[in-house]
Amino acid sequence: MKNILFLMLFIGLTAVSCKKDPVSPPTPIESTSHNFVWEIDTLGIWQSTATSVWFQDANNIWVAGYFTLSNSTGSNLAHWDGTSWKFFEDMWGLHLFDIYGFSNSNIWSVGWWHSGARICHWNGNKWTEYNLTDFGSLYALWGASPNSIYAVGDSGTIAHYNGSSWRSMNSGTNVHLFSIWGTSDKDIYAVGGDDSKGIGVLLHYDGIQWNKIYERFNQPGIPSGFTETIWGLNGKYYLTSSGGEFVGSDTSWTAINPPVEHTRMESIHGSSKDNFFIVGHFGSIIHWDGKSWYKYPEFYRKPQGDLLKDVWYNKNNVVVAGTSGDFRGIIYRGRRIN
Image (spheres, rainbow, N blue to C red):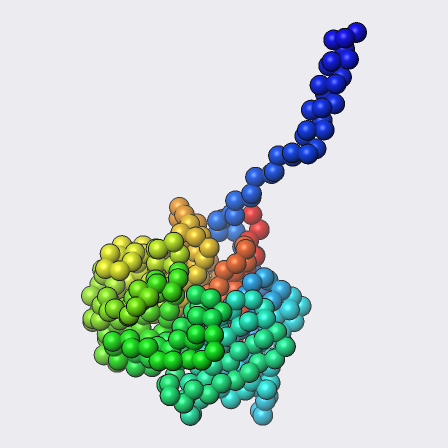
């Protein structure tokens, strides 16, 4: 009888202990598969383009560009709420080239108008436009934090926002800059080029000054010539240039050889070294899953395919922005299914 009572007491204590100290389920590992289902939207009626996209979730997608809505109305910014697209007609007449955010109530977009650079900010309720007459066109931006944002543009322009104002930074180059990405205020890369001269540039910021890694003409097999875009994480960066597509940092780069077939690639983004997208001309959408490349054949059409300019990935959703073959803004929304 004592043995039976002891066994019952032991089981009861064990059950109580398990309730107080449950075993947490393992954190699910994000899939890297190529399997996505896609939906395609067009924005604007004619002479329209989507230049950049940013989102935190699939029901809050923000797009910058130039969208003609009628003969007399249009918008430079659009928002997808999970059901439909909303255009902000009060933001019209600018040329906005990039959009980047920290939350759905803190989003920035940069571009140009006749009197200088334009920077627009969304606070969750409305867009506010800032005219920076001391700067030329701004083409891209990235932020280390809401109080430390960097923008790049014409003739080597680099501007920094410190939480209250924008100031110019010395880039050390006069070459146009079209892309910027970093991992902290002490590790930022900017790239660009000049098609008319066949030259490209790669800069690095170490927290003190911008340093020129290269400024050179196209040399196949190494990062060189017009350098279109850069993205990275954990100290490893990916870039596209006239000389090819590469991974590395500073002066050490290795070719990654995606199946681009002499196609100009415009943007790179993903969640890890084993899960990222590259997009570009002729409807090129290419995915790396850590083992193999996959080009989505349903979108690739050379020489008449869509010109895809930007890609953003988050939580098994990917959105691609660009210009359709009939000159409308086009958005590809992809959702991973396994």
